[in-house]
Length: 180
Image 1 (cartoon, rainbow, N blue to C red):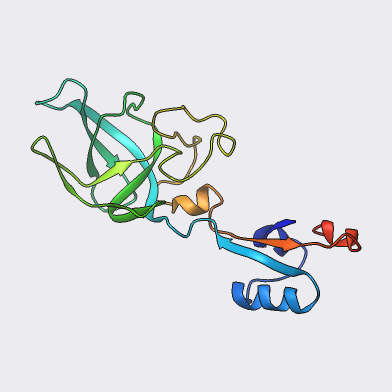
Image 2: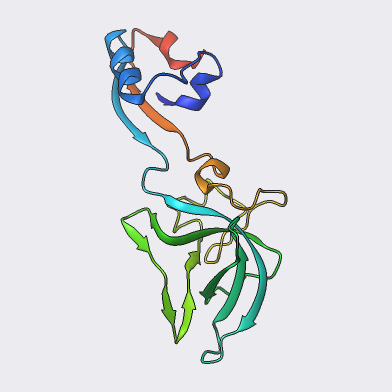
């Protein structure tokens, strides 16, 4: 059985218990924890951004120079080749010195001579499957719902700020197949 710590926290206060202690105590109680992992472990420095403006890249027919409000003092300039982005969109933004699943590191650089200080992300780049975000475009940037707070950590927005534990439940303990 797979259990989300957030879901379990709806029934029992687990806020002051670290994940190792939780897993050890659950195993000692007879509910063996086979595996546990942090859903957003590989993601850092990725926030919600709002695309403020877009202009064509002077040296490319398919790239755009975007100004993005990422909740910082100044807008962040990002060069993108994404075809589905428009001014006003709310998108995940990997800022300078961010990490993505698979060990991908994002740093500032230049694309065809124009500085870019991050990257807008698709659901695949965040390590999500299409089943997690069925409304997402197959091969474009992930759009977030209107009203999503600009500058908010993407792990919190997408529910990736959670630990999930996989329990080995024996056939004589069907009562353990329920969160309650």
